Image (tube, rainbow over all chains, first blue to last red; front, side, top):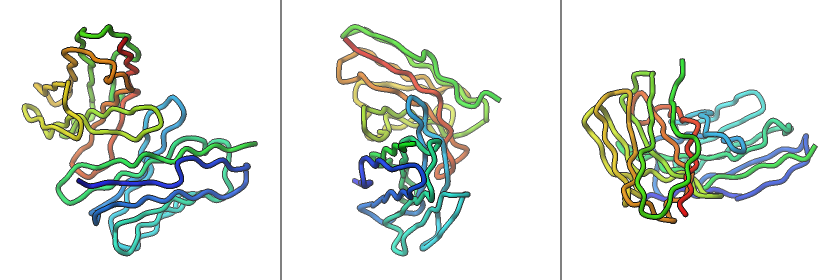
Length: 110
Length: 112
C-alpha cells in the first residue's frame, strides 16, 4: 500500500533560524496536504498542493510540491516560538483517502 | 459554529469493556473519518463514511465498528477494549474526498 515518510522526525532550532521538513511518497500523488498539530492539540489544516512543481506561500511558510508529485516540503523562515508543534503531510492517490506521514516535531528555543 | 465535536475528552477503560466515542459535525459535510494517533506517530485511518448509511474500513479497522445514521453523527464503537487500543482518537470531516479536513479536539483513551 501507499506509504508516506517524513524527515526529520525531530528538529530543534534556535528562534530565528529556518526550518524545513520533507515528505516523500512511495507512489505518485494526486494532491498533498499539510497540517500542524500543537502539543496536546488537534491537527489543523495548513494548505493543499495539487499541481506538479507548485509553490505556495503563507507569510513565513513556503510549501512545495515536487515535479514528479511524489515529494513535498515545508519551509519556515525565521522560526518563532509560535511555530512549535508537529507538522504532518498527508498524501492521496486519485480516488483514495489521504495517508498521513509520521510527522516532524519542531521545537523552538527562545 | 462548533465544527467537529467529540465526547468524551478522556476515558479510562478496563480490558474487555465497551464504549462509544461520539462525534458530531455541524458543517453538513459528506465525509467523516475516525483516526487513531499513537505517541510520536501519525494518524491512522480506522473507518470513514462518504454519507449517511455508508461506511467503509480504513487502514486499522480491527476491534472497531461505526455507523452513520445521519449526516451529522459518526460514532465509533469499541466492543472489547484491549490495551493495544490505548491511543488518542480523532474524528474529522470534509466536504468532499480530497478537500480540507476539520478535526475534533480528540478523545484520549487508556485501556488498563
